[in-house]
Length: 426
Ligand SMILES: [Zn+2]
Image (cartoon, rainbow, N blue to C red):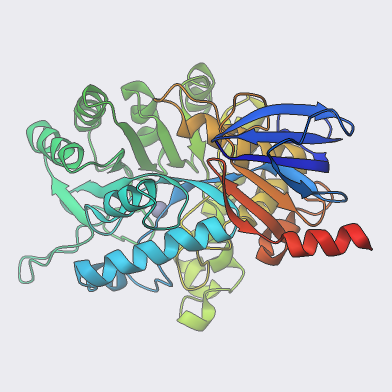
């Protein structure tokens, strides 16, 4: 069994406690021991990583992963790649996430049904490098809503399964389960990119959502919802959806529903896409802040701030992550969300980092009885050794060069130990 001992690190265990100087022993795929101070753990048989002056923390979880999105500028980019090309693209993105400290990816949805499944299986078999993956399904939507790209004169297929009514919904969810998807994605509310159904509308019915959740849970799978509207988020919470995305609009009753479900649901606000539009980061691709203004994006950001600041105060388990994979918000920059949690929702850096680690790990292990996302004895060993102090400056996590060691499941994915040696000698 492989053993790795980190010595002299500043250990941040994500429990909420302050960092301490200590040692962490990894045995097999698990954290075997955590000790304060030095010389507490015998190094016999272990590869010793001298981590003096560095910050040791859990790996991060991307809560809204689109592994099949790479520099997307339009829906067309999700539709046109062949399945073969798209599979290779998905494999590339998976490695990008791991290279940037994301040891887990909760799949939101993928552009084709089996992209996340195929890459997950190859990663699990050790054939590809990537994070732990819960594979997202194709989006399931309803006629005329987000993702329905067909018209009567042009019945082309978009990146969604279009269903109407509970029987079609049940069949679509069963299909996603049969093909191996872990997370089933429902497009519950409207969206500013689909003018027929703006963000405040709720095209999917409660009965459609309810039967999707019942079916997915019968198969042991989880359900994600794209929901921006008040009615949509209420329906999701009442139907037992596991992961709610966006949730900009709220009223007092919805906030109470969230609070009542806070031990069951996870929520990812996914503000990054709108942040980048409002700040003209998408302008080189033609999506200027002015166009975003016509689409109502600034109002959605304001609503997001109001709702998620309140959800933070009510102890809802937020995850970072949000629609990375566009040309202006690429996969690999997902840790920007940490800063957005501080800027928009009033999180302290420590609390934001707990969303990325402890909350993400709790979501990833919902169904397998494992523990993940903290540096504690018995937890799965997903660890980052960082050259810098993320608690003082969260943006150090955006610099892959400062991720000196990346460990997933006890296996060293990246070992910049030469850097460690040099630092130790200095
Ligand atoms: Zn998304």
